Length: 267
Image (cartoon, rainbow, N blue to C red):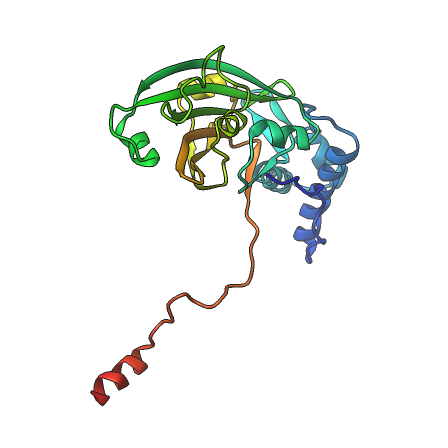
C-alpha cells in the first residue's frame, strides 16, 4: 500500500461550459480539503446553482465526477457526503497491521473462526499439499481506527506449524511463521473487482456501494508455499497502486514475419 497524494484540482478547462464545471469542482475540492470533515454533507444542488449561476446538470456533472473519484459518496435518500480517504493498495509482501501503523492508524482484528480443517482443492493446489491434508484456517475482519476495512481467510499447512493456534490465533501469521522457521520471502497475488455478498456487506458495514476488491495471494518461504489467502477489501476505501518502469528486452526475442519467411526461403 502506498499513501495517496493530496486531492488537488486539475487545470481549468477551456470553454465557458468547461470553466463553469471546473469552477464548481474546484470549489467542492477546496471545501473537502480545507473545511469539511469525513461524513459532512456538501452544499445542496440548489445552493451550488445559485452560487455559480449554473444549471443543475452542470452541478451534477461536477458532483458525479468527484463521486467517481472517491472524493464524495452518495447515500440514497440522504444526500452527498465527504468520503473517507482512499488507501492505495500497493503490491507489497507485508501485513495489514504493519501497513496501518505505517499510516498512523490503529489496526484491530475480529476473529470470526479459527480451526483446523481438511484442505479443499483450491487450497491444496496453492499450497502443494494433498487434498484432505490438515490446514489451519483463519477467518477474520480487519479494522483501521475502528472502521472495518477487509475480510481475510488464510490457510497454513499444519505440517509447517503444528502449534500455530495453540493459545488462540496469533496477531500476525507472518511473525508466527518466522518463529516456526519459515520466513515469508516472496509472493504472488491476483486482484479482481467484484460485488460484495450480503454477508460481506454486513461485515464491512457497506452502505450504498457494494464494490469490493478481491485479492488472492500465495506466500512463499525458501522451501515453498507457506500460506494461501483470500481477502475482500472495501472498494470505497482502496485503489490499486502499481509502480511502472520502462520495458526491458524480451527474454525470448520475437521473430518478425518477414524474418521467418526469409529463413524458410534460405533453407
